[in-house]
Length: 165
Image (cartoon, rainbow, N blue to C red; front, side, top):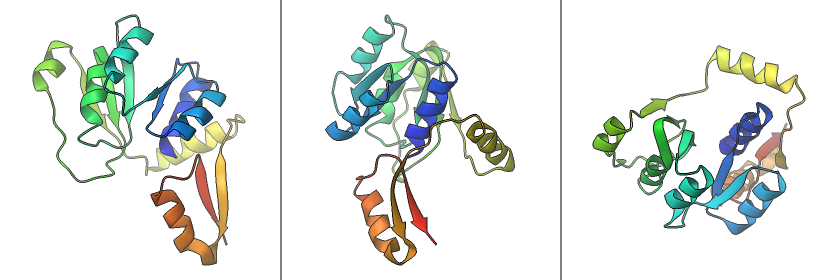
């Protein structure tokens, strides 16, 4: 979904990209896409693995599309000095623990962003014109909208799920 597209754009722009997933099969698919590293977000050593991959520096940017209470602290711990967390989603409406002292001491930032703007749409079409790879996992007939929604809810998709009108 959004995380995959974001990672593909970052890679196309020349960034070193560390991707994540809780699911084994999704991590295998991410590895096949040629990202620099693919990590298991459920691994307790997640932040340490990021540290090893970045020479102890942590990441400059972390894009968190879930902003869950379990994931956000891991993302924060993996962030380097002057790093930025971009929160572009909140799948659950639960409070997220925030270590303000660490944020302050490392001069880190948190930015919330919604992409439902004309500027974002214009940027999307500009990127689409460059031949950036898009991934469509599956297309459902409009009459099967309930099945399509269930497919996404059960996290079976790797890429976008479309409805055919």
